[in-house]
Length: 147
Image (cartoon, rainbow, N blue to C red; front, side, top):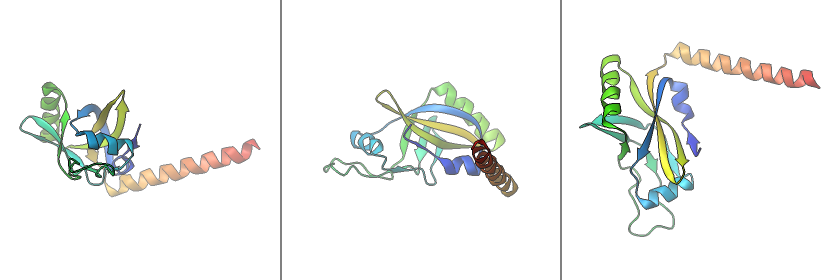
């Protein structure tokens, strides 16, 4: 696991996860290995029966040369056509969104976990914060009770 998009889990209700490959240049892979990327405001979009990752920033490789990559280009996600058709139906019918939630290595390949999400309302976010605080307090009390 390289990084998780915590903001996506807070702002969206995750319904389904899809593992995708990603089409990258060599210097982009090296930058990801260094952890020099950002999920900020990134999303996936289906264009002409292809899945594209938009707004995902990978910083230029510091030891790269003139062949270094652009940091803000759109990147193609590698998914089966049937999977793309199924996702397109769900996104168009139900008003759901495709959001990248995790970046990780599987062997020597970079994988992106794209999640089918529904936006949370403000009261749902407040409930999430409340549940998280209650859980932290319970763990703290359990730890103190043991000693």
